[in-house]
Image (cartoon, rainbow over all chains, first blue to last red; front, side, top):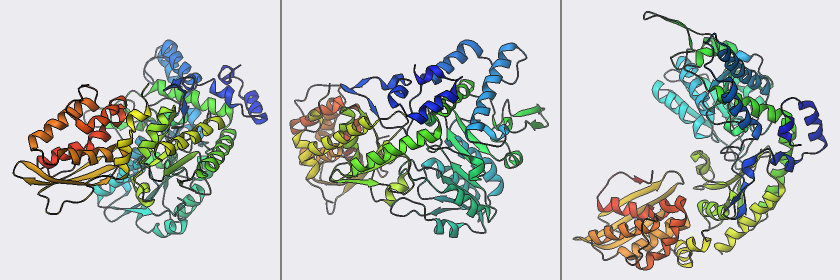
Length: 425
Length: 147
């Protein structure tokens, strides 16, 4: 029986099984896409930080929704509308439980983690950041946690402050603390770096910021699929993540915000769903979270995301984190032992991302040669150009692991890198 | 199935390791910058014109083996040519690397890039220097981008 076949009604039994042994072959059978040949080789998918593959439980749930439940939500009195609304709201509850938010109203559906950050910058940010104020980010952020703040600062005449990182790719906490000043209105940091794999000490970051009454947004796009996340334990004020990096569908993401903050924020976009009454003289906005969900939402996305989160719960995030950590350790040892290979990002606390450069070979050539071996990795700047600058490289090759990757696939990666060195010898 | 050796031919690897005319041309009367924002490849092409002819050409920058070798071999093949001849050569080159033509008769040594057509993701690498050359010939001020 595959792991998917047990879903979603027997999670307790599933988790006990995982504790007794993480069966990656059984898990792989849940992901039909993995079972194919690329350029005559078995596909080795190591680009999970870009997007993850979907278990059949997710695609089945989406098909089931369209074949059985589809209608517009929150407005029809008819039966299907009620059922679609239930399905959509069940997605919200699943996301709430997954990141341990206190209240399901603190979960807002957005298109992506990126949109979640933009929402906060354009609502909370525009309300609270003024001329001469500051927004603090870190030097390892993805462009999506830089540009929205840059746009805000430009509009308001505010200043974007950047806390530096060390040579291992870790945030220098003392510098971060020093940069939390009287004019800092919000701090925004990644939980796990997409380019370096660094896991940031978010709890400490939040404590430092809160000691000065500064709210913190955490970009969790790379963290939620990799490690257990508890937003209440972290204490952060906002947290964003994406569906598609979390083994769910594209086009949906989650913004978590503390209720009092969300309640006091102006709406993001205008339209249907986000109103409670409209006249040409005055519109009264809906309550949180619908206030932030203008227009017909991504219902099937919410359904698919819930299926993905249930799948992850079934495997257990602790188990996934532990397994991916083993993969990372194994890969780090093997890859760093290859002559001429340098690993970029060697933080003590790291999740399943392995960025590297090969002496004398451009990462794009690495990517093309590995692709010919059926190995999918990402090459380039990973939407983190300032990180590339910090490490004085134009680009890197990045292998990023997922819950279905195996040690054999790491061995294939190592053989692929050796082949690169042969071609360029 | 495409063979890696079709792409990474010895000549290409050799040029990528030891690019020719890899220098700023002193007193260049035309220059342009080209970059590929997706991968960060970035080259500057310098031209010294004599009337309508390319008297000297050089380039500098960073990029993958394909883009660097292409820039290197481009400089060799356009030196002494007129503007129109260089542009015509680019036309042939472009058609071959994008797979629109298999007629490599006009390409001379540049035929080694024919294998690029099997690797659509790498066409931009092979043509970056040429687009930059074209911008230089046209006297464009802004950096050209492959996107």
